[in-house]
Image (cartoon, rainbow, N blue to C red; front, side, top):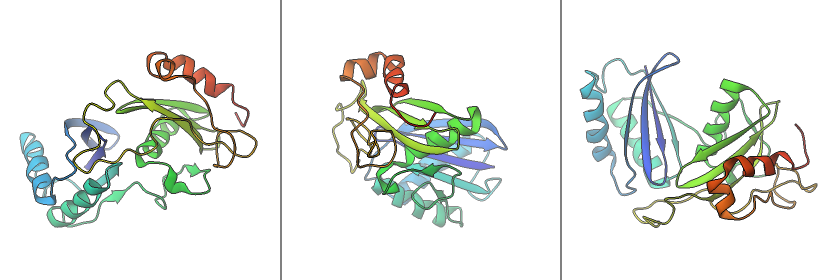
Length: 217
């Protein structure tokens, strides 16, 4: 069984997979100051509800996090309580998606995970829309390439600020394009989505804006 952990700026979602099937899932508030032992107590409670434990059934843990403090705390927790290292989505992790940025670290783990999930399920080209603390749009080519994306503040953005060690990645604004203005490597003009109301309230219109950008289809 695989335990998957998605740490967002506002909430953390935990899912338990048996093969390709999501069997259970839980959600808790992201608090950047939580220690590895506190996380073990929290996750252990979730597992116990289903008759599971750290020492039984679970053979792998996958982690995608945009909160650095929690990334490190979860790494420590998994090693200490599961007795093996987690697979962490980060630059250098082989996901099957090529990041067409000069510096792949510019792309948050949540954006990479979204791209992998969309391409695995639907193929490409594709545009992924994610409604979180920020509303984000990501573009994947037919050749499994992350071409770029854009983001705007989501409906709940700013309610909690950036307290508790949380750090926003790939936040509001526009994505980079290459020197020809296409989504992709930073260095060219940004991919504009119009004002925040359009991106948040009318995601279909924002996705249409991305579709009109020049570049591979």
